[in-house]
Length: 142
Image: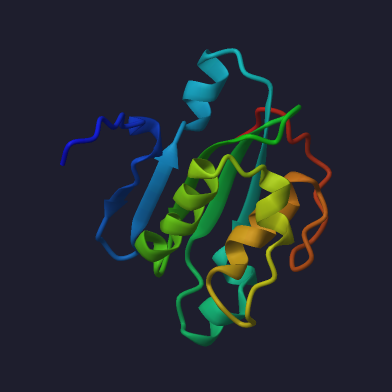
């Protein structure tokens, strides 16, 4: 088309259309650890999502890996209903170089599956609204 473009393959989503769906983009936790990065992980279980429970799809989770200092989103992994649809929001955030705090601040309609992304981002900062507080360390844990 007459223009030169580069592709960042770390920002290409991978989706598996199984029951439940699986979707991911970016680094896995193991890759971040092996790279020597300082990172935290935010999680949110589908069983704490009003939409997932109402639809009878409480199995699954959202997991976000982000740099501890900058909040750069390094990877996102989703297992559950609509995972392949949800990953696009995370790819967009990564392409725009949004920090994990930016994902946490987006106001979502309620109840929706996309709330799980914001909740996982809030969990990264240990301020998740819809799940119990955790006492485990967040740095590089699985």
